[in-house]
Structures are given as structure tokens and as C-alpha cells.
Image (cartoon, rainbow, N blue to C red; front, side, top):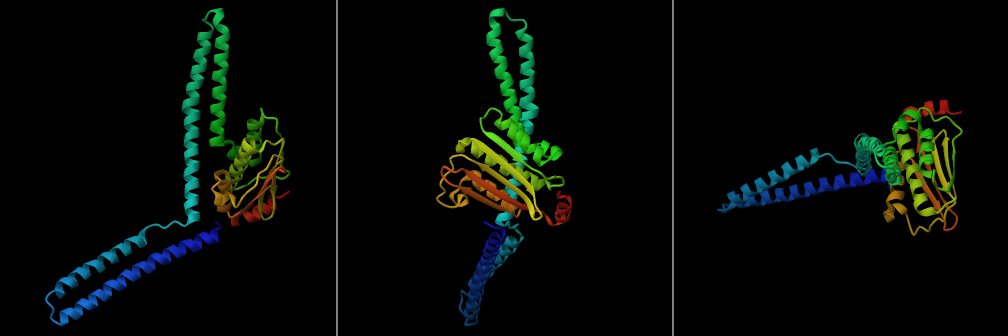
Length: 297
């Protein structure tokens, strides 16, 4: 869903709520007028009807006033809030893994080394395997912490962070990969860099799970209109029966959503047996447009 469509739907919903309030108000007003007519004609029950309808119209007015004060979130704003909550939760989990579980595993590894030196010789081989398991588990926890919260993104930048991610995740994989970036990416807004990193991260994960590819190419380009990201593999590809966002494919829908929230575009090209190509363009924020053009080399 693009931003303009989301805004139109939000306005339509708000207009519908306002029309509903007016409708009930009109009904109550008509009822009061009818009961006033009964009162004028000296009907005994008129006062009771007037009181009931005054109470009802007062209730409708109160509900209407309260509803106007409720914060209304457009779909775009709601998606932004959800992504912010998601990133905050990832950072919290990353800290828990690194600071708590990571430290506990490190302490267990040190205690194990201390005990291993005091065990008989016939226990050394099982202890060696156990030590390797502990070390591998600690490495996995560190890798997972880095995936959940790429701390190096702010200090090293997008290109170096992506390169580290590819090295870490494809180290034991036969896939040959290339990261192409022939321009400086200094000065990228934090939200843009995070969106590009998460999109590339999801694309690489999907490639490893499903594509059975032999080659992977990731390209970053600094263009006048924005940051261009392209991920291409030569895997088995797949046939899309429709729009992946409408089909509820979470990984593809998440990439599309991140690009859309940045005001950018996301395009998927795939054919069975001919690989998959994902193209993303994230436009510069207005305040960064001048700097982006001056930094381009």
C-alpha cells in the first residue's frame, strides 16, 4: 500500500465516523421535536420522552467528543510504530543475549577449562568435544546478537556492516558472493541505513533457505535521487501467483514495507530456473538531498 492510498483510507474512515455521529444526532433531534409536539398537544407521557431523548443526545455528543480526541493512526504511521517497536525489541533481545547469556557461557567456558586440567587423561577427548560445543554455542549467541542489533552499523557504516554480515553468514557456505560499492556512503540517515541493511539481511536469509544459489551479488549505489540497493542470485527462482505483499509472504512483505515507509520503491523479479533479483530505491530526505549530491563521487 503506498502512502497516498493509506492517507485516503484514513480520511475515508474518519469521514465515515463523522457521518455516523451526524446521523445519530439527527435521529435524536427528530425524536426531541416529535416529543415537543406531543408535549404541546398535552400528552401525559411527553415529559418522560423528552427527558429520555435529551439523555440519549447528550450521550451521543459525549461519545462523539471523546472519539475526536482519540489518536488516529494512518496505516503508514501504524506500520512505522510497529517497526520501531520491533527494532526496540530486537535491541533488548540482543542486549540480553550479549550481556547475560553470553557472559554466562563465557564463565562456563572458563570454569570448564579449569576443571579440564584436573581431570584424568581418559576424559580429555570427551572434554575436548564438550569444549568445542561450548565455544560454538558462544559464537552462535554472539552472531545472533549481532544480527538482532547490528551495533557496527552506526560506527562502521552500511557497506562495512553488510560485508561483515555476508562474511559471517556465508563463511561455511559454498555460495560465491560479491558486494559492489564504488562510492562513499558517508552521511546516510540512520533510518535509511537500517532499512537497507534489514532488506539485504532478509534477502540473504531467503537466498540461503530457498534459492540453492551458487552466486550472490549485492550492489549499493549512491544516486542523485536516492540510495539504490540490488540483490541478485542465480538460484532456482520461483513462480509468483500474485503480489507477494497480498499473499502474506512475511519476508517479502517486510522488505516491501520497509522500502515503502522510507518513501521508496521495491521491485521483485524472479523466474523459475533463472534466479531472483530484488531492486530497492530509497529516496533522500529533503534535508539530506543537497549533502547527498555533494558527497557523490
